[in-house]
Image (cartoon, rainbow, N blue to C red):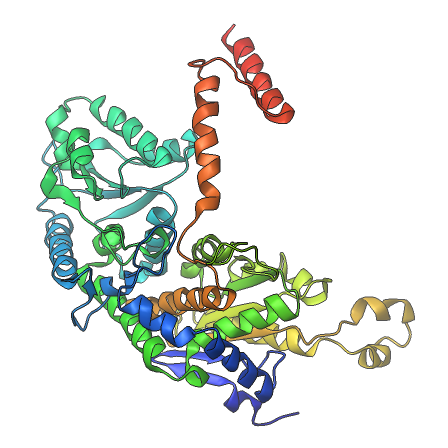
Length: 519
């Protein structure tokens, strides 16, 4: 009923428009949420992050992924040293390498050019580059095909190895410490597969394996030439690392010029986040709306709904970025929190999701805020074959957000189904389900960089409000340590030790079944 609501609750930054008018807010709500952000010290927290303060307190690290995309090249100081010369050195190294591979000048051990790029990493070393590579598929070179191996499950590796050959494959081992269990197990197995190929010698590893790491000695021991190690630093967190040399697969597939555009788009969003007043600050607005629903409406999850097939990896990427960051129950001061922190992040490509899980968002018993994300212009809609597809896609995106807002009032349903009163309760639903709509002019490298940075900063702001450390992830460490112990027992390299009843029974069952198989 408010004709001016959309205008008041819409922001534009670059080529991204955020319509947040379909939220359960008034002008006063927004004023109070902004006041909360100020009271929580958000201004100082933003300044501390960009200035290189060690805001990751538990690991005593700075959080300077923004320096990786500092295309203005202004000095960024860390412990008295400007980090930008090192950042630019690695970017130039990536550029030179990409030119060799993309031009066909980089040859494998039989003299053939590279045709397959295989990234071996896990977590941020996999989700980030994989998401961006797929999102920017219209920019791919036609001489290379990307592959990503993350899972320690041999089925993942076998599926890739069956599609490639050693002569034309380039493997990127992405691990900061070169000790990640899953990554190194896969890397060692693939090295063995490579050396088993006819005609290969150990020195040929240098032509087919490169590393993104900071562990130069381990990289060289593996057989990779020191010149083919691409460095990144302690102040680069894994889930914020696609802007670093971890983005090597991106640069190889779309070219260095487009990779630098990706960085530039993120830098533009950084500048907006750092300088815009909170009332017109896109990451701040989105973050505070998330806090509003998580802590005042008990909304336990948040849906990411991209209406673009090339963005199909985005929900999983944002899932890690948010849930690994803000899945915390202890404050920065070490006290237990007495309020909700990070929500469950989930979602899928919108048009497919409409026929899968949207029913729960519309009529389920839980309030689930949603972000609808869509490009205004498609790379494909100019085609006579696909001409009408994009209009259908966009109409579905807008209609779903409208339907979530409207619902179907019982009085209208009663009029429509007056002759079938038993259907009225089933056809009625309350509406007033909140959503944001993000319209992007086109999924270009620049705009994608801005979109990713928008969500990064949203997550950071929420961590500040909740007074938690968004940059550590100690919760996953215990499982890693316990798995090392159990692995030795499953391999028979150590006797079964005392565990809880459930764990011991599971290990015993596996050992007995494996013995039967061997017998």
